[in-house]
Image 1 (cartoon, rainbow, N blue to C red):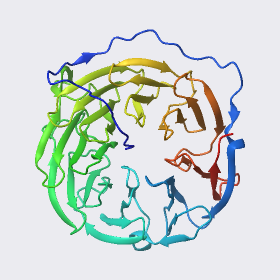
Image 2: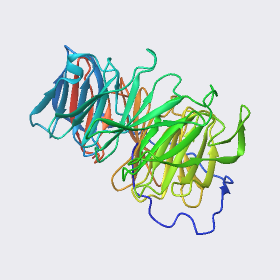
Image 3: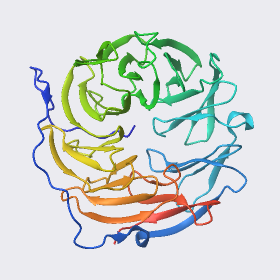
Length: 398
């Protein structure tokens, strides 16, 4: 999850649930061709992983390039032009899952034998390895690491009716986290991305299909279930959305949680009380990505509707919508000062003006999971033309 600040008072002492009424907005036609983003890139060096399959190429939350190989080795690059650090995860075996919560100072992976490893990304040192119970061969464990490195939340691919909370320091299980509808097939899919920890590492959140639950990450004690009382899904009332929860995004202070669903709806919640704050608009396709501007005023929402929208978070007002991008928008990222926003699809990166919606620059890409822009917008990593190496670039817009 990408975590950014949410400034300003969001809700008064008297709770008001607002169903947003859309106001007219404008999609912006381009009067001039956008720049080729590649003109703003300078190649610094390349990563040669020809003997391995690239599993993920991204940046840590601290802006360090991070390359994870599927088979044997993983590589971290600490600074532009500096040396590499290599480690061998899963005792040299293939990895079957990696931390979807974002890579910070700590990172976790899952191995074929149902073990979990937690690594320190600064020292490339393995901190702990522990074994989880193998329930079904098809249920691969998927780990999420708290930002302070003390907890690991584990969900299971496939039909996941439960999750597990582990102490990442001692390698001991804290609690088994379950939903309230053990036999509800539609309700109990533990979906990738819609799980993780609050920025302060105090709240663990798991979405079982259309239901989202909050637990105390230190003790495993149940805190809240997020309920929209206006909906009912397949005969089950009191759910979070009228569809599977696909995306989660916390405010920096961990007090607000934004959720997006397969049904195209977006809502925000008070994590202390579990109460619904605002319902935003509904997209035609499921929600694929969420981002908040650095000042916490603007919510960006990407969907399968081949566009993304910017909302005034406090007023619940639609600011603007991008034109048809031809692909679902799976990546959104604001620049550090919030004046620009990057949208990513399976075949294109685009840079937009946050205030006007003008498309400033774009470029083709070959892989959305092996191409990334650093949080400080100073570096970019992507596959080279041959597809056998990764290039690390300095990004300096002209």
